[in-house]
Length: 403
Image 1 (cartoon, rainbow, N blue to C red):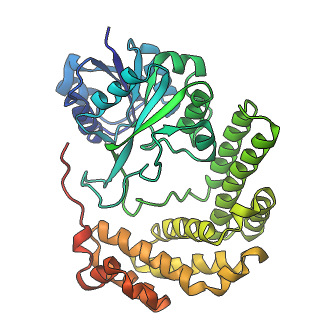
Image 2: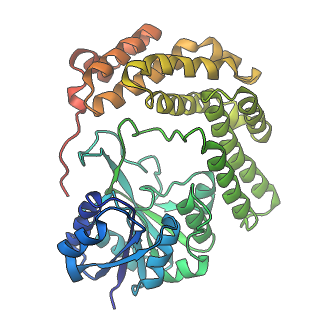
Image 3: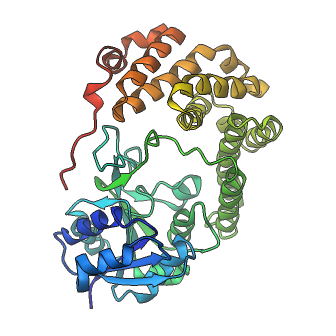
């Protein structure tokens, strides 16, 4: 029997999934099986994988039921003592499995081992920005860490889970579309230790201008935040802490969701619900939801995310309009931030400038850098931004991967 079962769910990614499979085949750790669960693809995935890989992989087809159902199907078919998950557009460093299995050997009680994740663009080139998970300084991820945010880096592509832990937790909830990995990690962390390697051993593929923002589609935002709240409700129904600590942690966790929901609603023009969610966040945890730096970075993340979805010629105007909508509806506790509009706008244009440079759009990167300096001249001391202004950001161009 193999020690590790690698489960790859896929849907209509016949080209990308081949790169993903190849990154598994290159692993220095060899005691594994690879299960590809095709969730109802309508392209040539079946023929392409059969012709290229034959018996080296186990390919199964199911009618389209969603990613969680595909992963659960893979778990049911797995023979390994450990389950490694990998999305069909991401890649692994050749030493990923080996390094993680060493951790399982050193810590017999650990349930999940993950790694940090580097970012690659759609073409598979390495983006020059800090890896996902770099701000998780501790190698042990607690249940408290997880209920506040999904700090297991790399989405569904970095974690290896002990099979007994998956069985105990009950697998992925196929009713959840937004945050199904987060939900499972929380349930496992309630009873088992979670550890994260400090090395980025996963290459997480993102689409153009998607490196730092997760702007939900207008028609999906309500469902996304609703499911996140449901995940937290389930988590806190089995909270490991006594009431005072549990209540404090719960208020902070829900305040974080409410603040994000508020800023998304305001960015989309839903002023009434946006203000309501913000007031809820402040009521739950004023020290968080009225913290100027926290709010500023959250505004920047979502504002630049939504602006980047506009046509290239309209992105600057879209960013300014989104910022104005958000700032016009700030609660009274953040009135000072409204007065510092230049600071907020500058930070947003700086974010767009660096993102555009990493995506090799030098002209737009220069334009954003210039607008940043107009809004807040103090950015003249930022050497990276000045390089973008002069060269279009050649120093930030993505580089080939060394797998």
